[in-house]
Each structure stands twice: as C-alpha cells, then as structure tokens.
Image (cartoon, rainbow, N blue to C red; front, top):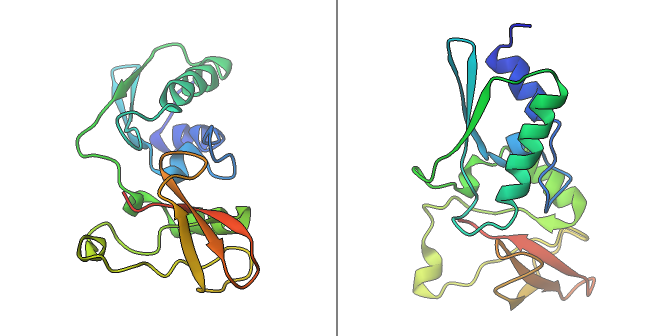
Length: 162
C-alpha cells in the first residue's frame, strides 16, 4: 500500500499524548516531518523538552501504530532543533486542553514579560475566571504549572509557554 504524508498524519493523529490523552501527538506538534526515501518512511519527532519522560512512550506508540497498520519500512528520528514550542499547538488542541481542565498557554513564546516579574493572568478552565494564582511552578508534569482559582476554588494545571 502506498502511503502519503496525509494518510500517515491521519494515522499518527490517532495516537494520544501519553500525559495528556485528550490531544494527539500530531496536535501537540511533536510530529515534525514525514519524509519518504524510496519506499522507506522517515518520521521526525521533536520532544516537548529534552528530558520529556513521555518521549519513549511516544516513539513506542508510533512504532506500534505503523507496524499494526502493515508498515514495516520506517525510521523514527528525534530532532531537537528547532526546539519544540507551545506555539506549535493548534487552536483546536488549546480548546481541547481547556475542555479537559488544563489551561492552555495564553501567549506566544516571544512574550518574555515574565522576565520583568509581570504576573500572568491565567484563565480558569473550569469557570473562566481570571482571578487565579500560581500555587507551584510545577504541576502534574514538568511542562505544566499548578494554579488555583479564587472564584471557583478549583486547582488546575496551566500548560506553560515553552
């Protein structure tokens, strides 16, 4: 069977992020390239950060998805340049994060206002209030911070801008 980039993207879109199963690894932006060298498929993945513990699981999931769909001539490459950024998250992925209870990144990574000590107003994914505060720089995973809402009193993760 001949595969196209689109058919492979559709296949890889079925793989959930191991830490945030509501979005796929394609929506997360981890799948960076799909190339063909003769009949050999080369898939390039970019980890969300260099120490991401979910990366091995993502590689295993890609390998299993391809193999289970009759694809045997492939290679998975990791690329750290350019580094992954939350700017690669689609609007749809951000909406899915919010519906799942994780506040999506609210600005572009080019916004460096945090360097000057400016606090972020993060919108609560539960009640949509901006009356929130950071409890901890680290939430359930290193790529998220733990926030709490003063309005509904719910704690929630905020997907940090990286």
